Image (cartoon, rainbow, N blue to C red; front, side):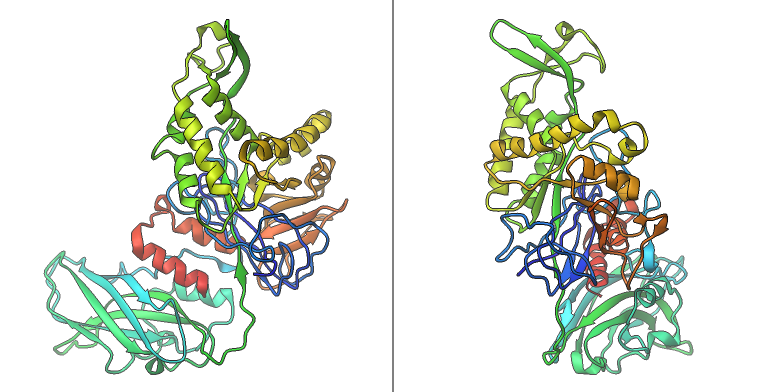
Length: 518
């Protein structure tokens, strides 16, 4: 990698995207979401993080990135996927700017990553595997899955086949979305590939049966590199109604023939590890020490085995990700490891009534695991305690500017000392991914020269900035601030893959993978 674009999913396991071309020396930025995976891509980048379609210069490249500044990975996850846009008002799983749960973005026709529903049909079809994920010139496409008789009566013998969209390679996101929304089988799905089908015995009510298909790539008759609509259908095999469609599912198949001479996109992902501030402005002085007081002891579970923050560190370890950290969380872990107290009731102002905290060992173990995980990786230190830039810019944050500016500088030194790294600072992240001139000016006053925002809603001079086929890229705002926009459409796909959105298991991950590749 020689450069690279950056974006991230933030929160319990985030996700966002940015793509770019011809990028020189741009800075790294975080995006937010509360479950798994932000994605960013840059094309032809050399030396930094990016934007799409425009050059970004002199924003500063963070240390510790791939061979020449790039990194690639996954986004963190409380349950392995992306969540929502907008910030959770209270509690540990802050989420900003990328999903669909708060209306942030089905921009450019984004839709869920699941296959087109087959509920109107008596047989449901679910894909378990599709290999290779990207087909080349020759070889075979191997598909496996299962069918289930969801009707109230027996279904006779069936035949399973494959179709490639009649229109050939798909050129736009609108076409991708149209394929995902299509329900009944139409001529647009193309003809069934001849002599490459699987036959299954009759299905009793509720019966489930696996299938496998192998199709030589030349039989698909693909017309070059690109993304194609792929339909797997189930039809009646026998009798007067043979050929009647009983069920189907759709996904996308990407092709990259050996002779293709396209400039591949590179992706890079930020890995946010964040939580809400819990340490009160109270201490309990004892004979030997001064102990901080926490409003609750929920971090004990989060730091412990199987806890959200522990799993984020374990999942990110060994992956070429850029870590996005709130210095306040590091300080809280250190305080817990050294001994702390917990208020008996939140907001209790008498530290003498506080109970002994029980998470010291879990916090110490978590810090040790985090030090190991970030070794040799790029790290971004957010402003201390991750202030809500949107609210501060619009609601009387001016008196706090000096304090927050110092807190931003202090945050980097906290992370550097605690983890033995050289973190990058100067990156802000407005709640909800929203960014306008007022927020940008306030961020600049805090010393933040780079701000990550939802590509669906960056406003400057009173107008929405939206250029090109995707909604990501860099935008220069008043005062010299650079807004790195993450791709809201891909973020919403990541949100759709989360169990909370109804997705589960390998089939959902497979369909998500194919849609993202497309």
